[in-house]
Amino acid sequence: MAATYEAIATQTLGSAAATITFSSIAASWTDLRLVLSGVTDGSGKAIRFRYNGDTNINYSYTNIAGNGSSAYSNRAGASYILTNDGTSTTAPSLIEIDIFSYASSTYKTCLCTGSEDQNGAGQLVKTVGLWRDTSAINSISIFVSSGNFATGTTATLYGIKAA
Amino acid sequence: MSFIPLGVLAASGAGGGGSFESIATAVGTGSSGTITFSSIPSTYKHLQIRATAISADTDSYYMQLNSDSGSNYAWHRLVGAGTAAVASGSSSTTSMSISGGNSTFPRGAIIDVHDYASTTKNKTVRTFTGIDQNTAGNVTLYSGLWMSVSAVSSISIILNSGNFDSTSVFALYGIKG
Image (cartoon, rainbow over all chains, first blue to last red; front, side, top):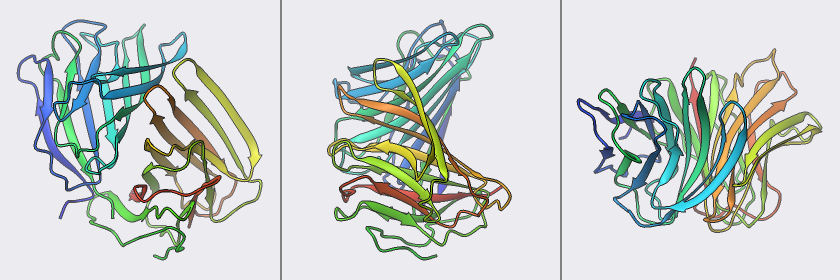
């Protein structure tokens, strides 16, 4: 029986890579939570993710963000969900993705937090994302808009089981 | 652990061990707009509700603690609806506003009730919630206050109108300190 809150898998990059994928995710939990910490090989890049290898424009997201001088909100439809777009080569981005009822037969909603502080720059982004597909989620790929996550980037997928 | 049978299905914990335990789960029935967790034990440090819900368009969700319907609540929120960040709040209210609904797209929410069992402090509730409707929707951060030093023993999430559908799930977790 699945524990209430357990680590399903962790990946730590031994070499730079553009994408980190968690696949063959069992339907044993209620929600999933993905936590990533890492830098990229260039600054100002976007960290995005998608489910089940779906590269079609079946996603949309709405966010609210602050960058130290202004607060703003954006919305888009895309082939991914965006977590943030201000990465650094030295200050790790912290990404948290909560996916609700991932194995249900409804559309999938997630809540994301993307943040990094670069000692004079940075941003905090809170996002709600939608995947317009009723399939159970069995894989999650998180990737950089261009280039790579640097060596040492670590991502952990957790399962959260309701009573 | 007992539950008010108003659109509530509940069971005892799915699995424990560790500091994050499942207390109970409530599922919408399509015929009730109220979800209630009652007889919450005081054995944890904090509580968290993780929810996904579908309800009629524009329904607003509210939270009351210990069935208190007096003007003992206040809340603030920061909302992003795709064009600008907007802040608002209200004081001396009869409930905490925590989100709004939609009949097609699920709303997700993480609701944290910190130090809920304290008998010397008022209670703070933090909500991170959002709904994307593919060209509409919002992401919202709420901070709520219940002006009572009573330990929280029940939590009700109430729709302004209509019902939670059968795909709606509200899961209560206890976090040990």
